[in-house]
Length: 630
Image 1 (cartoon, rainbow, N blue to C red):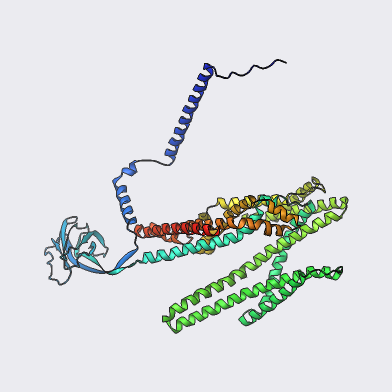
Image 2 (image 1 turned 30 degrees about the horizontal axis):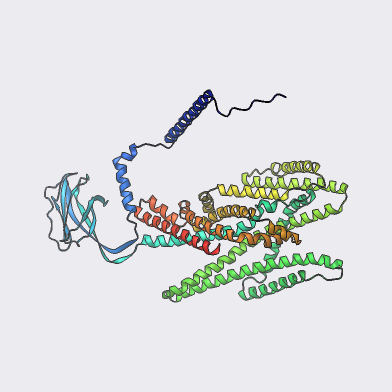
């Protein structure tokens, strides 16, 4: 076999020249492309220096910058003194003669003139260093500015102004309004409003972070690849779980209605609510103690096997009724406290300090009960759907383990067809709600038939030994949902929530909470994916179930980073909440937008200063908390 020649250790001069030319050509092409890109960028962004050099725009810019450099934070009390002098435009046969006056007064020289003619306005007897505007007042009463003045130490001022082009035979006026400051410095109303909105901003971010964290923690486990990858189930188990979802949802709704009826028997009386709550809690405690009691040594009787599921259902129903009774109790206590607060206010308005906190707590207690009343049916429906789906999945695994191949094959076809129909009918229901087709053929029958066909195809392509990656499927669905929510800015979410709950901080808190849930769930899940697998394997070796593995092997490793991410997210929410008010989400942003729209830049500067202080303070506070807790 002929050996190939060894490559040369040094390049030939021709190769070096070709390489140099190629490199030069690449550099030239790269520079040309970069120039074209930036040229197009300049054209797209309308870059022009003519507006920068425009004197009018420069004067407006300087005025805004000077206003921003004087935030409206402190002020003194002021007193205004307005004096007027008569003037004729144009001159009449007999010009006006200034009358002798005492106290502050002004003299117009001459006392008449043609439109746009200059006159000299002299003021006497004013408070030294007071300032104010000079205005021309025609018979219509409209105030037309002539300029501003500053009173000298001797109480006088002199200002040259042009008469307005408002000729009229009637007498017209020139008015000077002097404003003098007195007393000590105190906060302006703008500063007080800014402080109030600053506190609103911080607490809006706090509520959003709290709600988002509560929702993100359980969702993060579903979005963790290392926890979801081992979860696999046979086709029958997955299909029965899917078919059981709507059944569990409906069962949860019925359970909530039944619990509401039981709670309604004692509704309206706080004493009866407390007694009913204690009785229901005692029943739940007794049932739970019986269910978790050590098993008997002898074989369980058939009655005991059926009694445990029945007792579980009864315990759940009684617990739901107890939650409704607790919600009614909070509502009743909040209402009574509000009524007491009203009586206190009517009895003595001077006791407003005592009545204020009472009303604050009354509203808080009432809202807790109201939120529980609204959320209990929703949570019951969700928990019912999950619980029944888990039961259906468990039943499917038991069936697969016990039936022969022929029956298993038949069950795969039947259950897969039913699961496919349920999934596509559910999608059709969502599309019908969004687009309002109002056609059952398109939203029910066609999806049902297509779902049946897809289910049959899926059953045909699977065998009894096949295990479907249900955990990874849930992982990809969760990740897709979180990425979609994170891609939507909180400002856009706030617009939707403003339509739902109205303009105010509540809409902003809901928008931030939704975005926080998606962002924290992603961060939390990535932290779960990076934990050590050794503790998980050790706990699994003891025979622990999946929940015990999470509690004893996963949670201890993620508590410190979870705290760090939560504090960091609170810092982010504070910064977001300062501008989310631009779309009606409350907080400092709403106040800042109003002042910017009104061109009140001194007041806007106060809000900008408050935003800077809040962001810097939150950054320092979150850093200190992370040092102590993490």
